[in-house]
Length: 250
Figure (cartoon, one colour):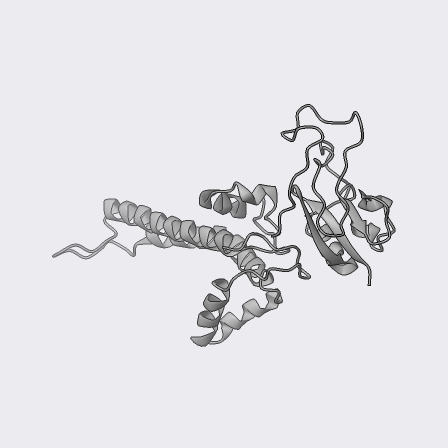
């Protein structure tokens, strides 16, 4: 079986099988320009310039993508070498210097700097209906925290409006009508957040190496919700699975 080492986020990672490299490509973690090496190759090369079996799954590299910095060799994996005269003056790595390879695979660069609020806003915008890929615990519970806070705000806002309109019962006086503003605020909030909430839960299940269809376990009365809750607090599967590469476990 062919095994590959790939250069991701400043670190050499692997070995990966052809299928695992394909999963990384489909998750957007690597692309056609990602540097790769396998036993038998004289030096590193862009993945689309190798004999990799699933080139059709590779995405084109971003237009502004820079060549990777120099990295040190790990065991039998050759070091990434910069071509003479091609050092990028904007690079934070001095020319000719090598760096130790990170042992543990890291999160994508976009994840490494996201705050809890950043995870929530991303889930509500660019990842609104993203059902593919993986979501680590920090991402899932960041969304859950701000979802609960949003729910409280929606409910309090509705109650304030209903109180001003006389829709809430008071001592010695019945309400004019049902608390329509509170009901409307909660319904609108649930509808607006249902899809991203479902999507991030499915990605959290994917992070365990499981099928997203297991979400349907929530339909089992009482027990289903408890099982789903336990699944959301389990640690990341620290290997590449069919849903993509692992992130930093939290």
